[in-house]
Each structure stands twice: as structure tokens, then as C-alpha cells.
Image (cartoon, rainbow, N blue to C red; front, side, top):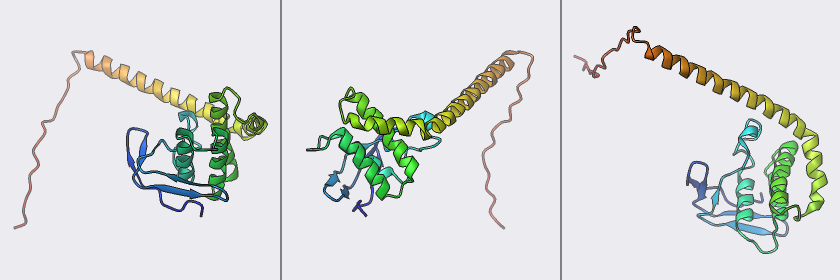
Length: 188
């Protein structure tokens, strides 16, 4: 197994985690050690797509490695290389084919955007292919999820408005039950 240590973390914020022990990864020609106190947000999946790819899963160690390679300059490792290492390490962790390619395409889009399309532009046809085939299904699911979330949000607003109106009517009697202190009975 290319990951030679377990992932040991502690919470560092709402969506950030900090390593409390180093994470080691060794591939055919490279080895990386992610040091203690390195931070990660696991998989940076937009909320719209977390129904399909949660922020953590079988790929969590690969996501931590990818975050480290993106945030810390490592000699000879570009963002495009980091993205490739991410996909390879997900394969080694047993992440299913389509999921790892979708995740790779997502980080490649971010890499290409940040580099103003100068970092390994040769990956662009593969990114487009991944987004055209399975990406259309994912996007369709995302649209459904957004529609349902908006519907739920509207229902919450309507319920809140109705409650405010009902509470503002003076003739509505509010019955309150006093809170009683708990009692304890010992067996005789």
C-alpha cells in the first residue's frame, strides 16, 4: 500500500483539519511526507455535488496529499503533477473509476483556471471528455438537488412567516406548561 501511515487528524475549524501525525506516501519514483500540523479541508467538493462525492471517503488520504502538494511548494511537482498524483493515489486506494476521474477533472479545472490555462494544457481534452459523459449526469443530479434545496428553503420561509403571523394575533391563547424539576424515587 503506497500510504505507509494512518491519517491522524484533529479539527482546526469548521471545514479544516490538522494532521497530528505525519502521513507518508510512496509511489514508484516519488515519496512524500505530509508533516504534522499540515492543514486540509479533505475533498474540496462544491456543496452542489456533495450528494455524489462527499468531502471524505475512501479517497480522503489522497485528498490530504493533494492539498499538501497544492499548498506547499515541492521541487519538481507542479499543480498538474499534483493532480496526476491525486488520481493515481485514488486508484491505489480503490476509488471507483468514474468517481476518481470526476474528482481529477474537478481539480484539473481548478488548476487550469489558477494557472490561466498554462499548466499542462494537454489535459484539457480529457477534462472535457470527463465532463461531457459522466459530468452531464452529475450536473443533472446537481440541478435536481438545487431545486429540492430551494423548495425546502421556501417551505421554511413560509412556515416561519405563518408562525410570526399566528404569534402576533392577540386572541391566540398561548398555553405554557411550567417546567417541573425532576424527582428521583429510591426503591424502598
